[in-house]
Amino acid sequence: MKRFLLFLIVVFSFAFAEAHPLKMTTGRIYYDNDQQKCFLVINFFTDDLTQHLTEIYHFPITENNITEESNRELFLDYFKKKFSIYDGSKEISYTPEYVKHADDNVLQVKFILNHLNIKSKEDIKVVNTLMFDAFDNQSNIIHFELKPQKEIVLFSTTKPFHVFHL
Amino acid sequence: MGELSFYLTEGVRHITDPKGFDHMLFVITLCSFYQLNEIKKILILVTAFTIGHSVTLALSSLDIIRVNQTVVELLIPITIFVTSIFNITAKQQVNSKFGLNYLLALFFGLIHGMGFSNFFRSMMMGIQEGSIALPLFGFNMGIELGQLAIVAVFLVMLLVYTKVFKGAHRDWKIFFSGAGAALSISLILNQL
Image (cartoon, rainbow over all chains, first blue to last red; front, side, top):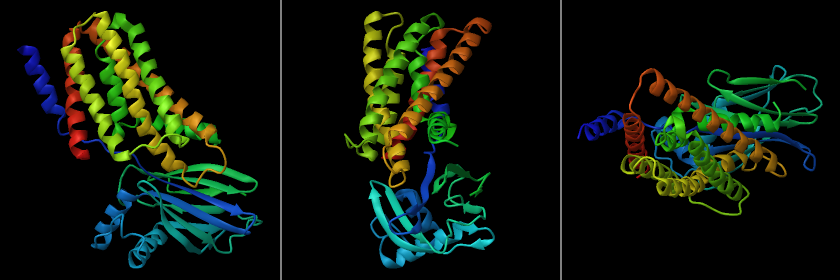
């Protein structure tokens, strides 16, 4: 009886704890030899993203409607506020190529990085704070592949930017 | 950072992050059944769990099998709950029960591997050019190292509890199984 009571007390004590699934985006910055352009690809967990956009824009953005044009624009607006890339001191603009569902609960967005000079001798700085305003344990991975540079970097709330030395 | 070391670090981070405690909780609940003089059994159980999750992590990451993420995320806390109930209902020092526990660890490892693979595949989707074998190997190695670290810390705690505080193993088992049961119920309710 005593053991059973102990078990119940322990169960009750831990019953209100909540697990927080790991929050992450993954991305890639690379140069495509065939198209002779630089690209940026980012994957989001669709459920986290749609929930966050709904909270920000006070409009129900769901897995089903996020790729519709008006919602897509809201998403891209959010993206541009949270992700920047600099060639030296010059900010690089980027143009969306697509927003699509890449897999179960994975939304993928691809951009062309305009005028990013891969022969530049300047350092390239990336500021990636995507979803940091949504989750305090958010982190973002970027695979940086501009030859000869190949590096994988983790962005976090304590280190939201990284400088790639070409 | 190199690719192998990056994903090895991510594997360690994935299993030891206290905010995403489900896998860690399973390992702890699994080990809590055994006493300090049963380290060999603990190691065999952890090995069974490792074999199980390595198999499904590889198969699912390489797209040989497809799993429904929602179902897997519900099954993971169920495995923790079942293990907790097993711990408090099974009798200590019964060899046949150890065989059942071993099979459960292996089977539950298969389920947890699918959970790891969801995370890993989403990391790789359209990101990795060419084979994902190297990052997959690194990620799995990281999970193993993280798991070993968890078991090592747990055994040190058990040592202190048993030798310094002279605590009864039954209370130890009840505490960790109770915590495992409660947290798993919370996780199950969140998934529903």
